[in-house]
Length: 121
Image (cartoon, rainbow, N blue to C red; front, side, top):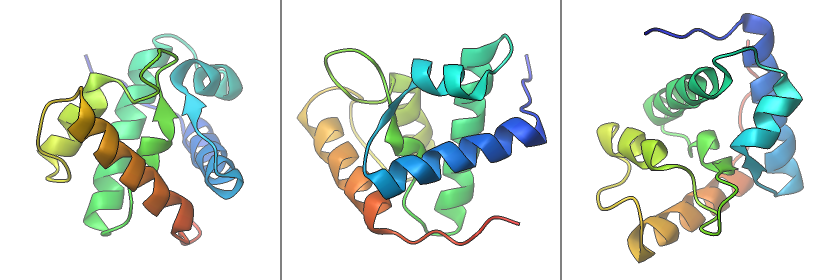
């Protein structure tokens, strides 16, 4: 099943991530879905959009803005699919749970907070 995000929702996603970056805070998947008011299948649409953004950021050699989105659970890490995605694009190697994932994620979030992203066209 292929999911697509509307141009309006895509721009809203970029804006929410930019706000989070400037305020130096993380967003949960649920909060982002609610803020964007994504229609069903909302989680699939959001994760596909975040994976696409990760690919775009990686190609441009930028920190991954999608790392700002985390699960509500106690781990405060992104879902395992995020780590699968970043492994596919060559940014992380290792299990999606545990110290290595948490350490890599914390470092990537710090890089995102410090990076000055160009304005999107």
